[in-house]
Image (cartoon, rainbow, N blue to C red; front, top):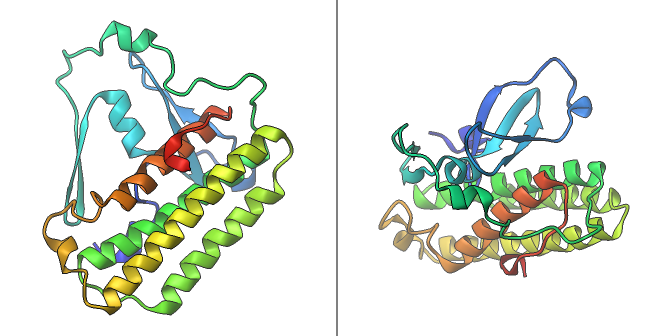
Length: 235
């Protein structure tokens, strides 16, 4: 798969769903995916008339597992007769909402767009590094500026204290991706990226990568829930 084919198959993975209705992008509401009989939900991003769902969140809901093999992402689902534990469905959320923590709709949409942009930046860079493709300063700068632009749009959409708190977490994630991107570019220049070709998950298992993935998944879930929550991975 060419790097440009990884549109929205981002650092934690986004899986396209069925096309949305004929509403324009600006008319699309913020939605979440719920699977009957399963606990939990996954945030949905609507972009260019199509809906995308966080594949890691989908994996958790279905109690499946993910494997990454070169140009493939393999989602394995449990047998149909395996039901999730009842206690899991009744468990308290891992990150309970803070009272009075509602996020504004405009900020939620802008924040989800920023998450998608950062994941596209990170996943395309990851793919290039793992497969030995050249990386140009121009491409990295364009990806970084697009993410910075979407972060400014999220900042402009802030309208309450919860939005401001969530914006800080988004900003922390942006800075983490920028630092990670700069690190990989420097390693590529020094011809020190062969270590990431040892296995399919070598780069993803890097501590900095794991922190970015964990925070990105948390932010997508938080924004999809509509309530501000906090998590150490985003600090």
